[in-house]
Length: 415
Image 1 (cartoon, rainbow, N blue to C red):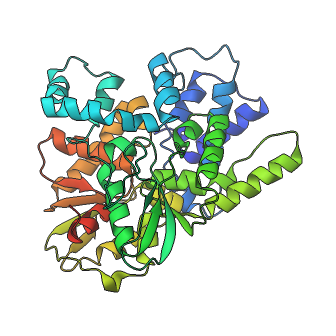
Image 2 (spheres, rainbow, N blue to C red; image 1 turned 120 degrees about the vertical axis):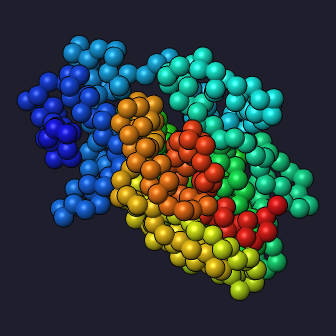
Image 3 (cartoon, rainbow, N blue to C red; image 1 turned 135 degrees about the vertical axis):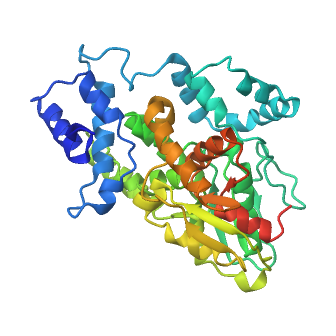
């Protein structure tokens, strides 16, 4: 690896381009695109350099650059299909709920599996996306005696027994389709601990893909929509099950809003701070939650490995709560996956934009799993889960990849 692909080297390049001492060219873009934004460097930096904000700012410079030195071949340039998907689905995630019937039909008919095995799509980006689709697509959790539905999700899931609090659940975008079991499990566990769960229908994408793609304005617009969606519900917390979304929502207050009206800017930042203070990862929330004496958890005599997502480890820095939560399951044997300080290669859309690097990182995770005699691999981010699971399916592994709250819900009796 060259110095230009190190955090220090990239910061030097950013400074050079921002000051006009270096050109905005394809080599600069390449060095920025190769960054995983895993923020491992930030987590260990003795000077607390906010590298995550710097790399995002660099991508804003690239996207907004009018330089004629950039060709359409650089990684930051998006295809029309990618732009359409971001506009029509990622920014309007309720449409993923509408796709559920479509995907379930193709899976049950076997057409999706045949398409994956046919090789018709070759090594295209679309093929890589389809490879991430899990073997089965679930339906939203149906609580008893509730008739109101919002695209399959209930507006409110009442606490079972005595109510101990009211929380919101952030659904995200892709997770609504590809990680339904985790969302269902979170609702199930929270309800049985005495928490009423609110699922606002107007919530949207967290904005991480836009933020890391250089579209700061779109990320801010989505942040405002989410604040509005959860506002006025008198919630103690807003629960996230995907640590990637959790970081984006929790760092809403760190956004720099550039406007001429300083009063509006201050109000925007204050509003972001109020919202971000409510965000909490589901593992962290459950560890400190009440009601555990009122639930039964079946023992599980299995070996479990834990993969720490970069967003949980380096962003939220809450990875230890996963191990504590899993310890609530009697007889369970839990150990960290070897190489937990290394990214799995998913990194948002990195596995699509930088497939060669992403596959090497994925291979290291697969090797670490194969070196352990485990039944389950748990991880707290949907991107990591889909990426690693697709690699394990490719080699015919029987190891199941799932969220820790899903494993807990199964031992608590979720059907």
